Amino acid sequence: MILACMIGLSACETMNLPQVTLPDVFSGNAGHKVALADGLEFTLPTAPWDEDETIDVAQQVEATWNNQTQSGTATFQGRINIQPDRARIVLIDDLGRRAVEIDWTAKQIIIQNANWFPQEFDTKRLLADIVMTYWPLDAVEDALPDNMSVHEGFGERTIRLDDTGRKYATIEHPIKDVWQGQAILKNQQFNYRIKINSIRTGN
Image 1 (cartoon, rainbow, N blue to C red):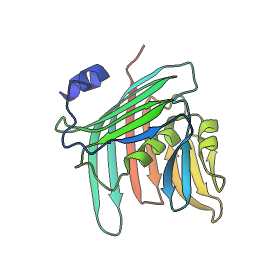
Image 2: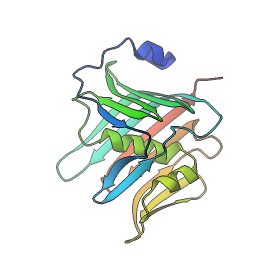
Image 3: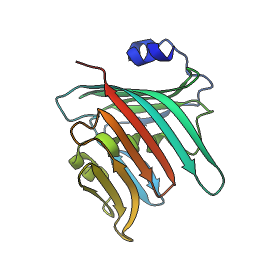
């Protein structure tokens, strides 16, 4: 079943999302805001994708966390399909169960996650993490609040809290093609790490 879902999103659509929570829905075409920390909000782009290229990738995702109450690791198979008018993201666990589904258009964002998905990972913030990691630099700059900034060097992005200079997150990604190879996001604010190995599946 995992392999079927990796071949195409249409195959995943035949699966029911087990033990699903009520979906989070961002409606309207104003900027959708995601809480990053107390008083800090990330404004997702109104249009999912502002590039001509269509993105279709399969991913292996490993998430690890270590906070004051607990630590853990979880692995998922992921699929991302992005077009100018729509972005769709699906995560499936090692048992073939669909864990997360995100359907993002200019009109709304619908986020569904299984209630067994680790609570340490806010699914809305996960979407912001994906944008921080893979979207063009100018899109990330526009999305950050005024008191946060992003700097990009040789295969690395650093996002800082400008009032303290402290790192919010660091992101390593492939230099030639961010959608082909390994990316690692380390969130210092919430003490978790997401390692993503991506391979393009489209033409």
